[in-house]
Length: 67
Image (cartoon, rainbow, N blue to C red):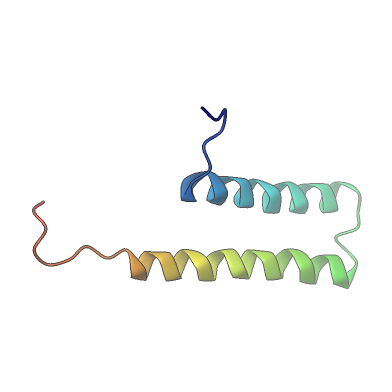
């Protein structure tokens, strides 16, 4: 039995937490003014949004499912 089960929800929560902590830490230490830090954080945010859209389109319910 695993303490933290690894599935899509856990991976998504960990990714969002890391990006959020990255923005917070970069703003707190005033390194958010550096272009490379901004690019890294915004690139990771863009990848997260793209993955969310991809999985949202992929997981559409089929027509023969009951509601």
